[in-house]
Every structure is written in C-alpha cells, then in structure tokens.
Image 1 (tube, rainbow, N blue to C red):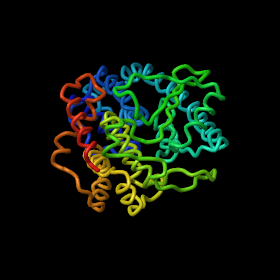
Image 2 (tube, one colour):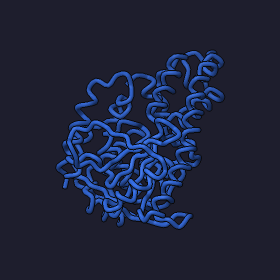
Image 3 (spheres, rainbow, N blue to C red):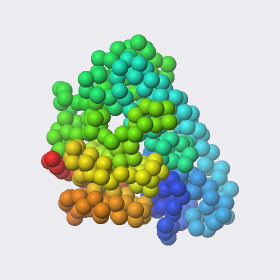
Image 4 (cartoon, helix red, strand yellow):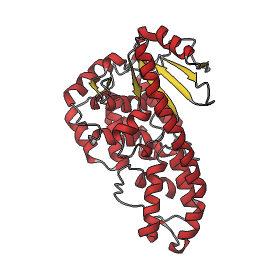
Length: 343
C-alpha cells in the first residue's frame, strides 16, 4: 500500500485505537490525500481527529518534516469544510428517517432504519463520527402498497435506476421533494440482487429485535452485526473502511452485548455465514481488533478461510476507493459468486 493508504487503516478506528503507526511519514500533499481518501471511505471524522492529535502532540510521527505543521493545518481547511457539509446533511437525514418510520407505522407498515443514523447513534460515542448520505429503511414485502402511498403523500418522487435484470430486486428509491439528491432507499430484503439472494437473504422478519427508547422495534445487537456484515459483503464487497468500523463497534458491544445464540440462529435462517465470517476476519486484520477473531472462533462457522483471505485483504478494501483500483474488481466479483452458492 501507498503511505496514505497505510495511514488510513492506522487512524480509521472510531475509538482512536492506533496499534502500530506506519513507518513511512507523510508530506503536506500526503496528509491532504489521506484525508480525501478517508472522506471517500466514510471515516473522515475519525481520521481527521487523529491527524489533529498527532499534529498537536507528536508531529514527527506523522510528518516527514515536523516543521510543516502550520502548512498542513492551513491545507486542511478545505477538508474540514467538506466534513461540515456532510455533517449538516446527516443531521437532516437522521431527522427525516425518524419521521418516515413514524409515517409508515401510522400507515400500518412496520419499518426499521438500516445503517445510517441507526448505526451513528447506537454504535459511535459521537454520532458525527459516522457519516452517511442517504436513508435506508427495511420493510416487510407485504407492505409495499402502504409504503408507496405514504411516499407519494409526502411528496417524494420515485427515482428509476438502470439494473442488470428486468425484475426481482428488493429495493426502491425515492428523492426528497425539497432536497434534490437526498435519497430514501426502501428494501424488503437487505440483499438487493436477485442472484445473490439465492445464497444469502435477510428479511425484516429474519432479524432478532429489541425495543428502543421510543418503544418501537429495532434490530438487536446480533441483528446489527448481520446487517453490517451482509451489507458490506453482498452489497459492496467491503469497498469502504466504514463497513469495517461498523462491524468492530458492534463486536465491541457499543449497542449492547451480542447474543451469540440469536446470531447463530439468524445465520442459519439467512445464509449469512460467509458474509459474517469474512466480515469478522477482515475487520480483525484491518483494524487489529482481537475481539473479532475471538467471536469468529466461538461461532465455529464453516467457510473457505484460505480462499477468502486471498481474495479479501486490508489492501483490497483501501484500494476500492483509491486511485489504484487495479486488481480489486475481480476479487469482489469472485466473492459475490461465492455468496450466491452458500445456502
């Protein structure tokens, strides 16, 4: 990996756990490149916080020339501006997600928030550490009429996307009436692709639930882990470091202890074993979190460990959003093929 890619993994942990810092130091453009890469990976808040701590306390550990602290700080202005914009959008989307859940409930459609604001609030010490740019909701397959009627009543417009197959997808997208580009994706299955759903399928009724502070049902910690693992594997092939940060926070118990019996039962119902094993192993190797390795060992999942480790490496994750993507795409496609046949 290039120096900024190594530093991305070293500084991405939302709780500031660094492990070993890379030996190669960065120049001013390298620090800016690191932050831009972190922004694409959805981990800019954590990385920026760590960079600022190093600049203040131990600049020689980060910079090739420790005298360039003021120059780096000046160059970070644009990065901070981008983060402020994303934070403002996330606040709006978080409030809108809760409004939509209430509207759907009033229309008789049971709904939970996927990822986004739910992960930000429940998994991170400060919700601003977890950025997101859209709203994802999970509903039951029989509630689509209520969902469509509610979205039309609220003024949302449907957004059509070109897809590989004529039908069979589990996701529909709407655009906010007053904020162009603010999307709401509603799913009846966490896995959108009809071919991947042959191997792994996660419906709302498959997840273990608990009641939140507002009395509404939400995914229990075991369900959060399934959501994070399957989303990372089946939808994105772990193309963002943010996927790994979500997983590590669930495993650390930041939303509460993970009920391993419920987790195993959910794996059996959904076929999520390969997704979960890949997620835990890859997160352990990328973020140096032994709790992921320990949980994976206790679950005793059957999975092609050697093949997956060859396909999915920390470098593959980092380069999925970088300028050097060569050799990454075929690995993710191979993982998708393996997911299709795991039931």
